[in-house]
Structure formats: structure tokens, C-alpha cells
Image 1 (cartoon, helix red, strand yellow):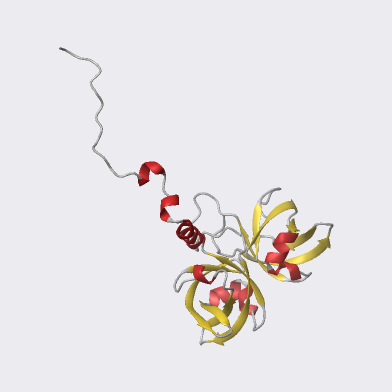
Image 2: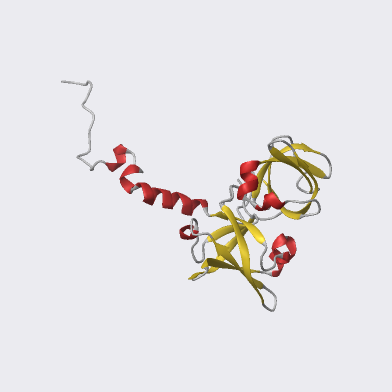
Length: 226
């Protein structure tokens, strides 16, 4: 599990194509300080497993399904990526619960600069549009953000986020331009609620909770003076 608070901007230093996976080497001195084989690190929102590491870099394998679902299908050497280590028990949850399981990608439709902030509008796939709500949480390239606006037009659905200077400087979102692709992960709570509604409430409660409440039961005495 992650929180969507980016720890470091990393750089892809090597891309190796194997038979069924792509092996990435990423430079990120901060996130590899305590990295061990098998640890999880989110790379622009995609949860990857560390297979090797040294003082400066870590290596991870990316499966074909992950490549198809995310922007990592276009990964290249020199690419800047957002990095976050998995959360530990006791850590502050500064963002929201992020799994690192990408729902799909979106494209930047519009970038509107302000005096000290920036508003970015992204396309929204119809398959996940119902999971994105105004003032709700969403992860864009692994960054925990609050949806500032949503809408529907003839060209399709969209959502907007408002980015403060810190987010623009500390993540890759500061470099995003119209046409760029980003990874999208919707709020896990929204996904669970939608699933419950699809199945129907009577399928989600244990039978003991769904039964009407009856008279309280009292244990019969097992002994004592006559």
C-alpha cells in the first residue's frame, strides 16, 4: 500500500526487453536507502517489486499486462518517474490509500496556469467515470490528488485537479503538457462501493446480519440451590 506522497523524482537508467517482461533499472538514491529484494516501490503509480538494488538504483520487472495498462509501455532511458516506497505501519497517511494497481491511462486535455498554481484537465474513460467524484481522491502518476471538477462533453468525460507549487516541483506533473499520457488509479473505497451496489446489498451482508432481530436470548441456569 502507498499513500500517494511522492518521495523522490527518479530516472530510468536502463530498459531491457526479455521474452515476457521488461526489466527496468531506476535511479532513486532515497528510495533505495533501505530497499531489499522483494520490496515494493511505486514507479509513477505502478507497484513494482525490487529484484535487485545498490546504493543508487533498483531493478524491477514489468509484466506485459502492466505494460498494456499503464504508461510504462512507452518507458525509455532518461525518463523521469515519481517514486514512493510502500507505506509502513505507523506512517502518516498524508494522501489517501493507493494500491499501485492502475485502472488505465488518461491524456492531458488542457493546462491552465495560475499565479502560483496550475489546473490540469484530463480525459476520463467511461469505464471508470462513475468512480471519480468532485472533491474525491484520485492518483495521477502515483500522486494523491483531490478532484477539483468533473464534467461531460461531446468528446467524452473529464476531470480536473489543481496543483500547488510544491506538487509541481516535486513530481513529474510539473512537466505535463497537452497530449501527454498519465496513469490513473481511482479511489479504492469508490471501487468497493460500486461493487457492492452492482451485487446488491442482500449479497453483501452475512446472513446473521441480514436476518430480522428477534427477542434476546438468555442462557438457562445450569445449577444452583433448589
